[in-house]
Image 1 (cartoon, rainbow, N blue to C red):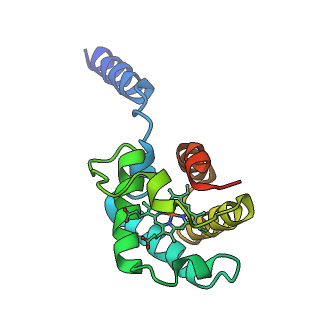
Image 2: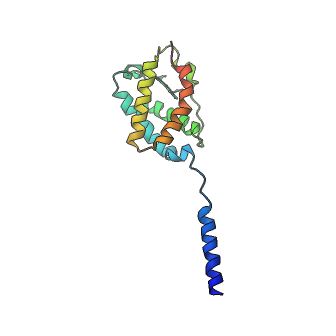
Image 3: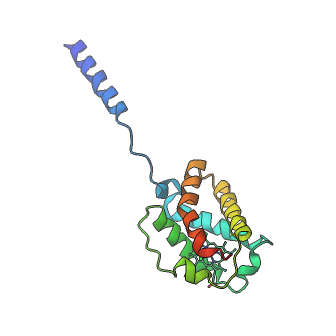
Length: 140
Ligand code: HEM
């Protein structure tokens, strides 16, 4: 009887182990809203120190930008936030942002994600979600 019970327990245990946990959402991998806000804060610090693009932000309220970006990334990564800022085309219209500026900003974002140990696959997923916005932001 004892043998049957322990066999049963072993079978149950291995059945549980075989059930894989669902993959973490991008939002979770980024550390949810608090984690995203930290990455965005560091990202803005990198932008503010980046001579290639800092001039674009001379008149920008950086605290406001941080909260808008956090909401946008939270929403884009499957989180519960709602981005209520302007659409990407109108917000960046007339700034004459070129591809080189866009790439510089992406570099600053990657640096910030590295600083916060965001795993590379999650970084790629976020960049994949933001990449399609390039056409609305860059002027040729
Ligand atoms: C995928 C890339 C980008 C995303 C997701 C993004 C997103 C945003 C968001 C959410 C805002 C705030 C909108 C609002 O307050 O309604 C914003 C504002 C702004 N962005 Fe971007 N942006 C991107 C690329 C860039 C680049 C490459 C530059 C320049 C190098 C840039 C320059 C600005 C500036 C200067 C503002 C502030 C405008 C103001 O002060 O009103 N952005 N962006």
